[in-house]
Length: 426
Image 1 (tube, rainbow, N blue to C red):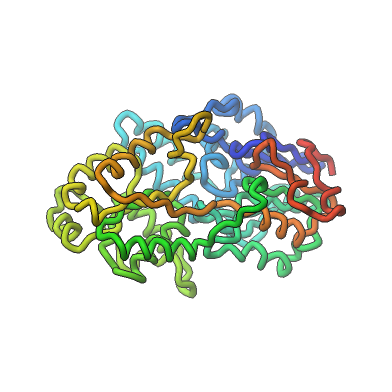
Image 2: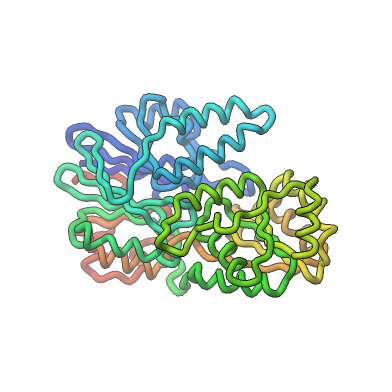
């Protein structure tokens, strides 16, 4: 078996290739480079020709989740090459591009994306499947994208664990450790490929989503008019916001049609045995500026409203701002701080998002940040490596080039298994 890593020493743009001795080849993720300054970053693989050349001879592409830095090049994959993703992830992506297909002038582009997505295969958590002589078993993990997975790969008598992006401080975060013994992963993995986004933050712990829910509840109790800027596909964050409102003042919960449908998709997949993601227990209102009954309700009862940085929401706000008294209003920013951190040399800074937030501050609205990382802490990465206890090699990907797994304080034995090689022959 041969493992080839593309761009392992950067956050985003993830691509891993695994090929068996018999010539079966699969890829784990085809990620686009992360945006810079709110605009798409250049990417050498962002073309049909580049992906056709890269994936020549491959039998399948396996995606760990639906963030663009892991799946953003899917549209370049040749039609005959199978692509796999989680079932809920597929549904959310189809919803996204069906929504975008209504953008004037972009109909043909996104209809093409939809046709490609409709051909995607889906996998079931905990159930193995085969591609040639390679066996794959997906295990669901907690991440800031719904329906994320780590993948166990068996090939040529060797076992590889690819963690994808994961964390243990989400609502289902402990699940990543619970599968290790029942599925004989502990002490039985030859090569472990782990994300390392936060390995430089060795002294920083990540706050639990349950802690965020309490913070959201405090804000919702304090202010009558609450706007929240967050991801529409982060099921945990939506649970923190929706749950905080339901468990406190139960104000009208407002979204747009796109966000509401995404929440209903998530609710439809929710486990009835668990108290999370049941967003259909009291359905959100879908905002329409001409719905005067809803405007009256929002003005008099207050609200919690999910917002996005878009022209549509700017038009919505023209109608909603007059309903709100500034001293009773706040904006909660619940995404990565770097997007609105206006400092020199911050490549993540998004001036459009920054200006969008500023309009609330300029109106005298209170500003709060309530956020936690979608990625594992350095301590959790160390714990997972120690628990899995790989026999041969440990590889860090999805990390800053200045950070190394050696900084985690692993035992001498485990530290000796860390490799920076981008091609491994097993």
